[in-house]
Image (cartoon, rainbow, N blue to C red; front, side, top):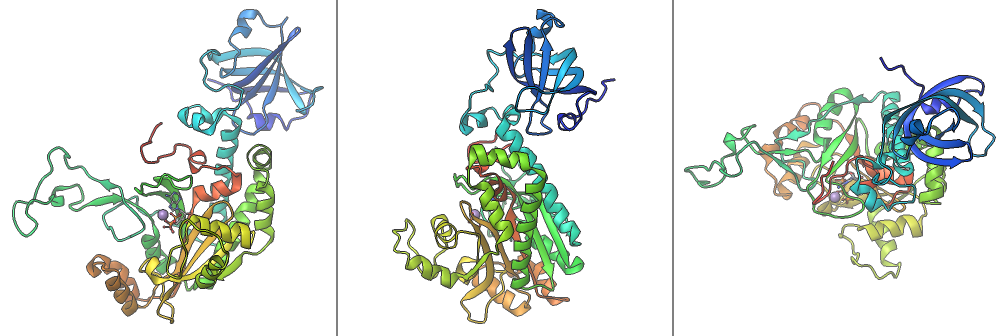
Length: 467
Ligand code: ATP
Ligand code: MN
């Protein structure tokens, strides 16, 4: 049996004088007269553990394989470190190399690599300083999100990933089939003769990967009051941007007996509390992002935790954009959707903090958003953040049966496909509201990383699904 070494994060907490066993991968090795300094890391924290190997105590043969990338076990005594940079170091008395690593071909070198290159070595990039920090923050953020909702009594609901109802309407869907694509069954007769016979497919009808768990979450909210989902979501949109993935994670709270005000309050409280918690648990990692990735990241996060968000209606936002005098790539007028350049102008130039835009024209929002009395706008709210643009999209839902039927017709949707969604409005309907938050968008915000491909372990984007 292999005995457990402490995590390096635990070892670094210990007082000098004791003994310790450490496991990890060699980050760097520096040879000086009579001693070898080896930095090792096991992913448990940002700081490496410095191991000191006395050249007299270990043969050249034993030290030969202690090179960057190798996996090692070191046992020794913890002593106060005379050098700067670390409080303690491990003076080795015993050394074992589990797996050597050829220094000539190991792709991860000490010199800084570009993010593009690191994406090509997705199996090794997690061992770099940057990605170590990214994925510890990601873990802490996931935990903070669950703990936020659990603290307030929200029920965690697992909504399906496979769906045969194409009524979510939130973007292009990936089809899922077990039909033989080389030899598709066709309908032999009837009005649709010659078209694909999905009756023979796995579910007896076309199926897809989910683009949102919202409609299912609404079912649960109308039984458990406050619920949330946190799971993977898929969009086959061919948008090669630094903010879009084909597979991403979404958090979708849904609250019964709640209107748009309550929805906005939750969004704000949510962002404030989860950011504060990650700042507390990942201070060292965030310091790294501040120093090496984006020097504004800590100030930005402080600002979110401390100040309240700006609220504007869509109509007010459009007026601000129109009078800005900017030469927009996408011209703005009442009725047009806000583009990234507009969202960034509002958050970065006008308000210099997150902004909640409400009451969008009904034509550019989903059918299920609650209609306002003006007949033109719906109770939607988008939270926009500096640098990122849209981070949350939410709304109060239409709870009135007749109005919802009318909105379904206006959007040229098939009423029969929504029979269960409409049933929720026939039996015990209540005002309810919720939002969808892109987990990776929030990761971009927290870390200052520039590209969404670099805050998810294994990015899936058009033309790319490696590792
Ligand atoms: P955008 O306009 O930025 O494409 P959207 O309007 O399509 O966003 P929604 O359908 O409201 O977004 O989805 C809810 C949230 O999911 C968004 O606020 C965003 O944070 C996130 N999101 C949407 N699409 C993606 C994507 N392709 N990759 C990563 N996150 C996404
Ligand atoms: Mn989109």
